[in-house]
Length: 564
Image 1 (cartoon, one colour):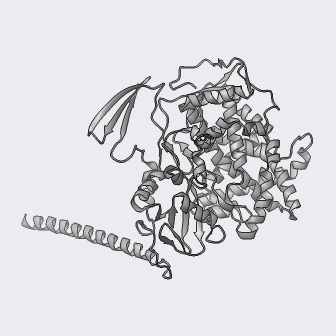
Image 2 (image 1 turned 135 degrees about the horizontal axis):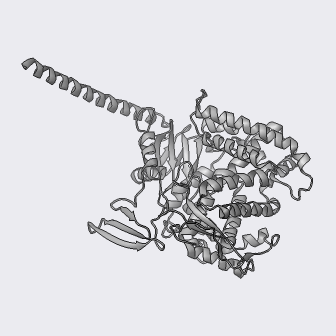
Image 3 (image 1 turned 180 degrees about the vertical axis):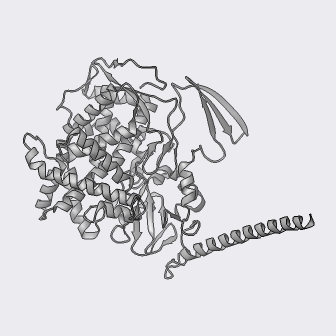
């Protein structure tokens, strides 16, 4: 018995010693890991390195970031909410941090819903920003980086392209997009290629795309309205964006079956665009390469068939304009350059436009008064007569641009729900931001979303308020880099005019030809990775309208939610 007790004590002591040793080893390795990156500071610069944590060896803070991505979000420090939702009511329980009491409200769900608070990676970065400031270091997804927030800091990064910083894509992204893509170009090559691409998004080109974009949107809304079941808005918006890119921008005439195959292949390509660059069978990187090769074969076939399919075409598509622009600038695009440029055009129009379209629909659902003001503006401009949009051909680019309230709505959607968080750069030389040094060779990520969220020029920053962009208030006029949904500097998004035109036409069609309602009990949570989108895709039931703006209703069960 005595020996048994001794053995038990010995085993427990051994286990405790092992645990203590592991804890010490982990602590020491973590300190060495921190010192490893601290040692990279530029000794010739007296400024300190940015504050922050590099996490654990090799994995950095990736695990913490992933946990934040999957965790539900709250309303901030010291308070929170829980909701119990019944058929027509919301029971809201608020934890009041000031009075240390619970406040219970019973609300009609048709006039109230919980805000779709963005969560995920944004929560991780917000906590680090509060702790370390607008410029901090971290280690995510196998790479050390310095994250930058704030208009003045972002301005310095964006205006320092080719001098202070240069483009920095993950290896898998750079490989899959191809060496001839605009995204991978630097210096003089980037300037020349950007000049060639610029004509694709000129005023004249947009005017020629407009009726075709409107037609694609109208066809999609008819399909959505004819579906007796609610649709997944994010997924269908991706399909709509892809169709617009292939049929309007590129002018490809493909069958519905081919379109479905291309869409599925392109989704595989996008899903693995930011994968680990491990070229092994069944890896995401290998899957992305296979998808890219399949796309390039289909695109080459479509490009070679274009001259045969041009009869009866009444406009120049983006590919026509691109090839013409290249000749005007003294270059001839090779087939490989055309294929990579084509994939880049589709990619630019795909994920971000789908994200913004979904956010637009969600905000119109949440704020029916905004949708009604859009209709009033259309009526005032003579674009909406007796519940019908003006005849095809009368909707001109200049007319759309002149719709001031519509412009405010689109800008506010892009401010609150910027599709892309930011972009990566590499420091070409050591420079200063916010009193700290950015050492040469370090990756820098400037944050568009965090800059919008922290900009002092925006009043009540979390509220959806399109009037903040009106001529009377003009909150965005306070500073150039407080509002930058499309980036800035020499790498600002070339297709921003096309993207906003697409969103404006979609809003006009939604306001004039559709009625739609939320098909779930409450609005979904919004996540920000890889782009902003609702966790469930946003389930919405669409109805067509007759000439008197009355619903053409299919026989279906009564759906919950606020009808717009």
